[in-house]
Length: 428
Ligand code: COA
Image (cartoon, rainbow, N blue to C red; front, side, top):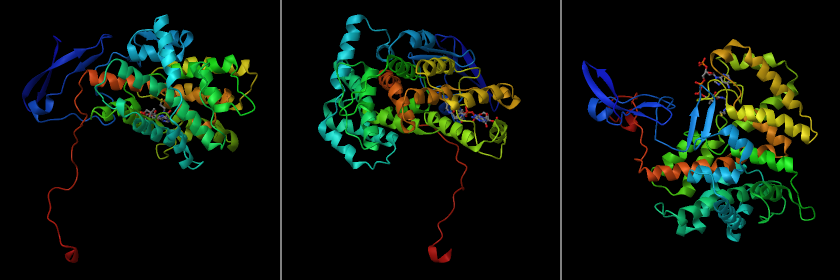
């Protein structure tokens, strides 16, 4: 930290340290700005605000680069399993064979949920959104594991909590689905891989064991790998904000699920399919929807377009776009929504509104079609995102504690009424 940045306010100059990351990302350390100058910064949405230092994920939005612990997403997506990826994100290195075996065994051991926890599912109405169930149940797990609530536990205790969450999130997700469709629960099968086990819990029936076709298992693995972490996005920041009060990992990730639910974040994958369905049903030309999205008086947006960080392309959407074709072909499926999606992408690529604002398809644009192809029901899309994002949430929570990060507490500029006197009710 040799460089300094100088800020001049009201004729006085103040020096601030400059911190440069390992990929030459630059920041000005302004944590003393208020105490030194009396000013705060104003950055709603935090587009220019760094909230932490992190060694987990690197993104260069201009160049379309995404790396987990230094490994390019293209390489990880084509070669690694989700379990390996989760290990990498959690522990910083790819697992050696014995570490991988131990980690996989640990995940298998923690997949079943306590019978009393299972009973809670019957309290949810069938119409309960699976994201609400997931968040509630993740919080509830803590009631069954008081021994894991010590946030300062390290080593085996932390490993156990992390494995438990990574594993139970998919069991809870599958049971939420089974509950919604009124079918009996399937217990985890320890002989199956992470992805095959999830598909079994979702789709096996008492007299018909679901055996995932390799293409489906591979596709699910890819989907989860692509979602495993994405640095300080809305849900991960939420996990960090909640964790900064030293809340336990269960409640922190439960809050992450709630943040993910919104259509501007993880809920976009569901919103994209709804949008494409609407376009298909309406019979209206694409230009109608594109004009609507461009109309500033209309709140309508093209879902699956735009990204806070990627201003050129989202590398995950490039991977998914290619894979969605392969998966549809291998499964011998045709999806008319894919055709609409391709035409929509094509039309926006030559439209000045989208070009000038750097609005390109993001990961959610093709992920809905991808999940549809492998038979995942629409109300589970955002839940699938949550399963994938779990390693990132856990790892960011752990890093926050390791760095002893201060409690999150942004400032504001008050714009309300200035001091005034109370008027008794009868005099108003
Ligand atoms: N359709 C139409 N216009 C869009 C748009 C979309 N999907 N996304 C952004 N814009 C426009 C905004 O209206 C704004 O226009 P303006 O400069 O004329 O005011 C400009 O592009 C910048 O957008 P902004 O909302 O400031 O970007 P952001 O970084 O705050 O938001 C998203 C990013 C992702 C939330 C936003 O692009 C969006 O809502 N996309 C759709 C939802 C989605 O796919 N979310 C998943 C993200 S992975």
